Structure formats: structure tokens, C-alpha cells
Length: 441
Image (cartoon, rainbow, N blue to C red; front, side, top):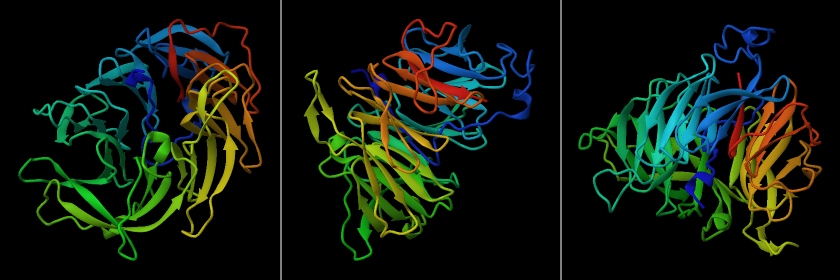
């Protein structure tokens, strides 16, 4: 499969891949709540909208979220747009243009793509600052002058598309930024190590921020190893990092884990030196049944995970599918026991908090649906109604109506928050291949 059909994070926000929560529970600002011609929407004049990335057409389609109607409006994007990521303040939508190896920045209020960031390589993990002045993208195949060691963290400006700094970093693939916006934690394709990027000081030999390899040891001074680390979340005060290793689900050598790193234990050298090894203390670890997708509730200090143990079975259609698990992990004490519930099969890619119900999206699910909902009490896991539609690549809440929009198998679908199928009297058929959907303020 093309890399375009892979998910980050986030991803986190990831994060994709990344910091803080990633639920689609946004609310409208006051100027969005009127009716009729909306001057803040110079193109569509719609009070409530969702955008859909169209992989084949290379644009962003606009859904009228009041009438559940696909409009004729589209916004230009780069080639083969896939993942949609909101800026922290909700004013921008960052579009991963996988075909043109770029990021498009849509200004949600002005309804215009204001910037195109040319990355010179593909990315599956990028973050941006609260004030939209800067962002960072992990570009594992960036040409940094040596074909033997490609890779860089590319710093960019989301508002105008300008590039600032390329931190040469072989094979870097995933990253997250702490809440203070002073450090990045990064992971590569070539090892199972965490790396620490200090954005506050430049290495005098390179002229860019230095990155360091972290040597992890627990409080008894024993070495701690990771198994395919791909995501990281930070505590609200940025003193702890919670590293998610997806383990055997992602081809790692061991079980999935959540590893808690004390960031105050990291001491950078007085003279920044790229590649230096720094010690970091691991406060504790949890072994979990999968950590491919994650959501961190920093208010209540709870981490939610979706993933697989790597165990597989053959379904009635002859497809080999992975098992699925959802985990609720209270971070208030390192001795807390995770609460686990079985969910639908497949490689987990998305986790969304929609009004207290968790919507988990997966890929390669065989004959069953790729979206499972989990009640806030963890009392039950409910798959969406059959028939199965294919890979789940987008889930968002239309905040004005409470409907849930999804992208499954390249098509657009609608559900109630209870998971019942909704059919619109209007056209909702995206011509091409839909990939992601995002309700925007």
C-alpha cells in the first residue's frame, strides 16, 4: 500500500501524533451561530461546515453540516491529500498532501488555503504551535545531502508556508512537542530509542537545535527498552512524557507498553552536542494490550488507548485480522491497573472522544465494520451497523447537530451518537476517494 494510506497519530496529535487531546468535540464561536449570509465565511457563507479530503481529486470538499449536504464548493489542496489536522487554536486546518509531499494550511475563517509547506519528502507526523508561528514535521526520507542517511525534522511556518530550519536527523519518523513548546521527543525507523530535541539552544557545529539519544533507566538503575515507540503525550506541566510503544502490532519485539519518563531528570550539556547520549529516569511502565492509537485527557490525567496484542485469527471471509482492545489508564498513580475491554478487529488508527463515547477506527478488519464505539463506563463495545464499509480513515463530530461523520472505504457516512445510520435527503456522495473528514469552526 502507499504511504498515503497510513495513519499517524494522531496520531496526536497526534498527534497525529502528538500532545494533548485529539477529540472532535469543538464548539462554535459566536460569529458562527447566526443564520443566513455569514461574512466570516467569504466563500461558502455557511454557519456550520465539515471538510473532506479527496485523495483522487486533490481538493477539500465542503459538507453543509446543517443540512448534511455535500456542496459544490471545494478548496484546492496539494496532490493526494489525506490526513486533516486542526491547529491547536482551531483557526487552521493542516492537510497532509502525500502526493506532493507538502502540507497545505487552510484558514478556516477566510476559507482559503493560505500556505503550502513543501517538505521535500513524506511525513506522517507533524505538530504546530499554539500561536501558529511555527511547526515541525518529521520527514524520514528528506534529502540532507547523503543518500545513506536521509531524514530531517523540518521547521515551517503554518501561516505562510516558509521553511526555517532543517534539523538533519536520519530516519526520523514520529514526533511530539511538549506543552511549553521548548522540546520535541522523536522516534526513528531504525531503532527503538527515544530522542530529545532541545529547541532552546543551537548546536554551534550545526547551527540548528541539537538532538540527543536518551538512555532510559528505571529508579533501580536497570535499563529500560521500548518496542516500536511511535507516540508520546506530555503531562500538563511538561514534567513527564508518556511514550506509547505499539509492540508486536507494529512489528516490535515485545508487548505494547506505556513508559513514563521523568523529563526533569534530563540534563543537556552546557555546549549543545548533537548525538550525545543523555540519561533519563523511567518512573514506571504499564504493559497494555495495544497502544497504536491514543488520547490523553490532561484535565483528569487519564490515558485512553486502542490497539492489538498482535494476535491474529482468520474470519469467515478468509481474512487474517488482528484482535482489538481498548484501555483506560488512570495516570494518578503508577500502581493503577488498566481497565481493558475487547473491541473490533483490525489495525487501530483513530480514537475520538465524542461526548463521552469513544469511537475507534481501524483498518484491515475483514468482513466486519472497522468502527467500534465504547461507552464512557467501559461497560460495552458496540460495532457500527453492518454491512462493513472498509477501512476507517476519518471520524468527526458535527457539533451543531450532534451527528457523527465518518470516512470508511473511501466513502462518506453519517451516524447518530448512538451509532445508528443516518441517511440524508441530499447528496453526500464524494466523487473520487474520500480520506478524512473534519468539522471546522
